[in-house]
Picture 1: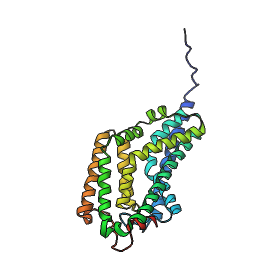
Picture 2 (picture 1 turned 30 degrees about the horizontal axis):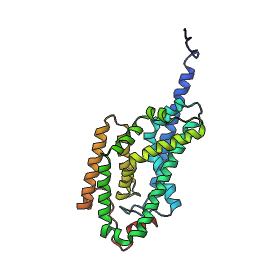
Picture 3 (picture 1 turned 90 degrees about the vertical axis):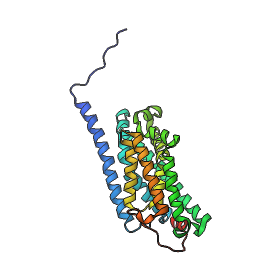
Picture 4 (picture 1 turned 135 degrees about the vertical axis):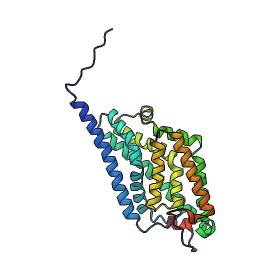
Length: 271
């Protein structure tokens, strides 16, 4: 049987148009990330109280959290969205994919807020910085370091580092399918990064410096070609920070040590 060759478009205009569209989409994601960094820095100014910083009300925190996730995650998400835009026929699909991704991270933010509020109610002033708060923060960093070397972390990171494999294995048609795919990719990303985000809470979730530090670790793990080097390097950094936080917190640059008071640390987080 003879199979005829597919018709070729006259000239390179369609190909160039597609390339420009993908480049524009990537530029949009980076622009949104830049706006997110600017907005986050503006809203967080003067709010860094170190580990277990107060989170404010749920509505305020959730707004800051979603913008923060856009700032931190969009650069490493860009390759997946760009590839998806090439595979999807609907031009709206990549935007819906990104929206689904943010919905999942928004749900993770609600869960973090609920844990903070529950911790404040259950533990009371035991988790104040001058009691157990420092030790809990240090232990959080050590747990995060250990999670870096677990099989679950490896599985989730492989999904994040393989856009084509994820898209082929999770493909859903239609706009609702785009949202579902984005939400699912966000779930893999949460599985990959939850310990790093917990580390951010332990170092100061309202600190732009620590936010940039954690974002750099996430980007390195997801984009550098040397996956094992990035993962083991991240684990080593978190281990060192955890030990320093337990032994000599004043030696950690950019760490704000909470003022000694009688207000429960976790209660301040959820207030």
